[in-house]
Image 1 (cartoon, helix red, strand yellow):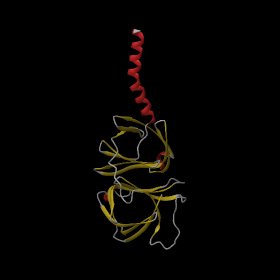
Image 2 (cartoon, helix red, strand yellow):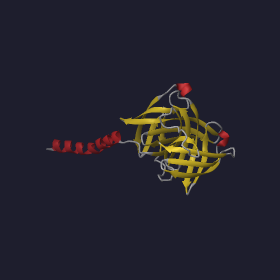
Image 3 (cartoon, helix red, strand yellow):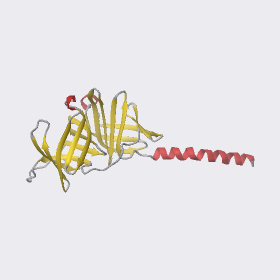
Image 4 (tube, helix red, strand yellow):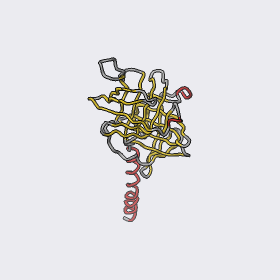
Length: 239
């Protein structure tokens, strides 16, 4: 009888640990923006609708380091990412990456390739332009040919929870043409980008750019003046 009670006690003690392990194995990373700072280097993780972007940069001094991104599947606590872009492709030749991850005390750690621990996701709030957008054509819309998702040459804008990033790339050759990102706001027809990294010109970091926007069906009409002060009209299509 004493042995049975002792075994029951051991089983009861093990149940929470077993359940915790099962939950950990089945847990997945929620959609959102995750930021970590390691030795004055910012790691920014964007996850939304099976799309993954990891960007690395420093703000002081301003320096872009790298970015990778693409569609992923999640299996056994590993993100299997088929890259659409890789700023280091000419160096490492990677078109696919596998990223093991784990959870501990509400934080998520990714091995990319060194272990980087991100805190909880940045606060979630919606704005008019949230989502993934592909550059379609120069405006105004007069029925001209548009660049769609079937075109290997792409310019993607990813906007979520007050953070934005644009990336220009070619999926067949993996040619990387540039990226930039930071925080944004889109309210009442005014779109504002606050640049925190820019691969082509670190001196652009800190700039704030204001534009007008209008949503027409699945199109974003983006107008204003570019960084050179010249009139600009772009049409972006929701991906």
